[in-house]
Amino acid sequence: MATHGGAAAGRPYELVVFGASGFTGHFVAEEVARVAAGDELRGSLRWAVAGRSRDKLEGVLDKAAERLGKPELKSEVGIILCDVSDPSSLADMAKQAAVVLNCVGPYRFFGEPVVKACVDNGTSCVDISGEPQFLEGMYLKYNDKAAEKGVYVVGSSGFDSVPADMGVLYTRDNLKGTLTAVESFLTVKSGPEGYSIHDGTWKSAIHGLADQDNLRKLRKQIGHKPLPIIGAKLKRRGLVFYSQEFKEYSIPFMGSDVSVVKRTQRYLHTDLQETPVQYAAYATVGGIASVIKLMFAGLLFFLLVKFSFGRNLLTKYPEFFSSGHFTKKGPTQKQIDGSSFTMTFFGEGYCEGQDPQQGKPNVKICTQVKGPDAGYVATAVAMVQAGVALLKDASSLPKQGGVYTPGAAFSKTKLIDRLNKHGIEFSVISKSEA
Image (cartoon, rainbow, N blue to C red; front, side, top):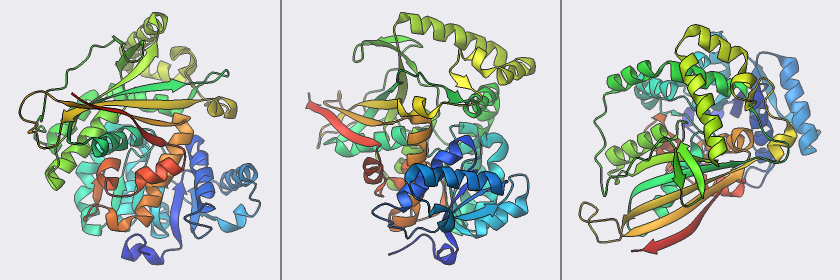
């Protein structure tokens, strides 16, 4: 069976989890261990964990061994010591791997050295960044070199933005005709224990919002022409609106989904001549009380994030400023076990044989992506399956290497099937013809 990239075939490890001892990293390492023992790979996967401290990395493997009931795990998994501030150690890690799963964020501070080490050494890499500035910056700087080296750098392969990006493609593939527009609604449920998010994500959000100007400059530099709008123009909704479908208030979703989906649609349009799909993302927030609470928190955040003293305050006291949603410890295992997400997609388009440039859309479709805890469990599943797709579906990847979104890299692979088998489930809820 073709494994990934000729040069990478003889390397000691197929997958290396970098930052395995971090909060998200240990979920990813445990997921690799689970998948390595599963059907398709049946113990054949050569993999390692990488980071600064041997003790901590051994601790991660101990914990995974215990949770999976696999005492032999430690003897099967390599340990690589490296540090994101030491480029030669990153190069050593990259040389030993076919694919690196990079879990060391915020990526705007620590991401680039890993991408550089991987591209320089002919290694593919996957990250779970939700930071458009990092993702698009890497495209600008490394796309050509990655193409030259035949490696795939796939960003945003966690909960940001695999469900959205692959969900739009799944919706397109299940509509008879031409899909022209999709809106998604994210609903997150937590159990009786409540939920909190590790403050690494909070830090990424603080710096991301503070740096909007540079993102605009970066996009100017990349200089893409706007995508053509095919079909009826998708209407923007307000900052807060009542969603009839969910009988709840909804707001635009703040994550990277829209920017990632747009990049995928641009690639599919320019490289594969496919009809670009318009996309908007929303999240349901509940009743009017939740809306008011969110607005106050949001206003405070936007005011403080513009000033360095404000950013310092936000960084120092995540729990206070997020009314408990973000904590330095992150969620407990119980909170994680009780949490899940549903992303619902409402698509419209034109039936087969009808020109989408003419008249009103006349077919509708509703699809869903459901999964376990979004922040850590679904993120780990998505990231690991992206890595497996790079290894096992190599012949279905884009012809050329490059810096890709998940949808661009994996639109022709079995990624959606793989996700379905591992608890992130894609389904068609309804289809209708007008």
